[in-house]
Length: 545
Image 1 (cartoon, rainbow, N blue to C red):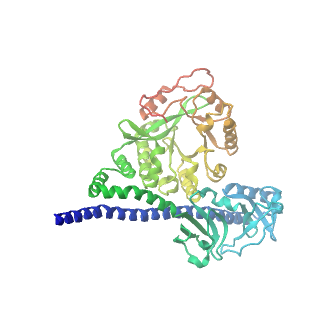
Image 2: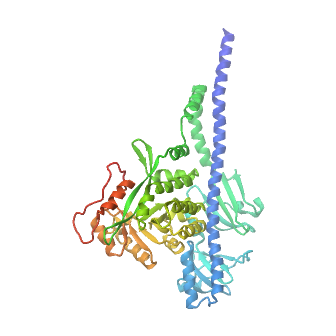
Image 3: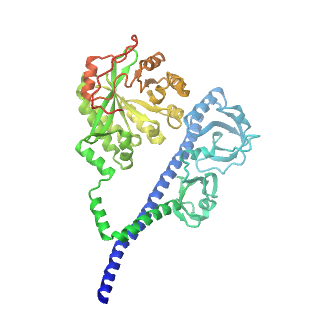
């Protein structure tokens, strides 16, 4: 009997070990994976800061080259105008300056800047740039500026403005000089020894500061003159793993191998979001709807916007904001974009050959505008549909333009194909005016959030008019989206807006319904009429846009 008890105890202990050891191993592996994922996240932030700083340095070098080539006096009226143009093109500068003998001679903005006390400058970098890291205005004690200068031409910035878009509660950020380990700006719990040249030499590195309790990425920019620190507390990972362990270890002890076997069995039947997207691509579960685009001056339907939908289940349709971010993160966005363009070919080729002036807008994701493959995909679509068949427009949101250098080259290549460019959701993102000055847009779309308040007493009711004034000043075409009433349509038409889009004219519809809509010439809006106006055909199964 005693022996049987011993054997039973041994088997029980073996069962507990078999149940617990995989759990402990899984916890360890999960922690290592979480740390690796966190390092990659910190790397992405560091590279974003790197690009932001390099954009400012590139803009400074370009300003110096342009002014030198023009041969004009820096502080002449023409020179000051050029300084103002430079300041408008960069997203982080307050003003463009011209310096002589460590003083500001003229600037693109307030003459008060000529009183700026520059202080000490760093030694010249390999590219000829010097940095004044503690410039101040007389009488303003609580505000310092940074000045980047090359042979007299300079940009004035708030040091903290460089890192502002990346600030989060769980991140500590800093910009430093590798040669001396001194910070020019920092935010959060950044420690001095992370930037010290003695700690990791002048090289990029990842390390765990166990004493301080931080995961740290130390990134040295190209050329070695500037560095970035991005750090996050390791406690966030440890706390998450501890909560996980308190629940999972007892469950593993009690259920043991049965739970593990069940988990393995169930996991084989589960699909990750990426696999679901791949299956949807393979089985043709994506389709397009088309929302009419109306000429506000005569009520004709002169185009449409192609809107992507995913038939997720028999009675469930997903909109792009649900799956495009997943596609971008999982690297499938180019496959989806390729299928969208193939759907355009399938739906619209015959129609566009009969209606060569019909405008068709296609939305591109942020990742599309960072990919050099995108112009090739659009060119292939144009070739397959036929030269001169349709007038195409590519729409981009402000979020898609954060990678300034790569986005600009892709947009230029798209425009070279004869495709017009429109900026969507204007006024709802970051540094909108800088985007308009930097990118070659043809069309500005007034966001529906501004359209809905344009004819009301809301605080934001004047925003639409200011946006339209700006677009007209820049010589851009205008389109108001989200129009739902004749009052809104009349308002935008009276202010020179060319095109309108919204439920007043027609909801998103199938290609066949769009063809009928255009053929019937149903004037969804006629400026000469008032009162209740007819709407375009709306299929009963059309999901809301």
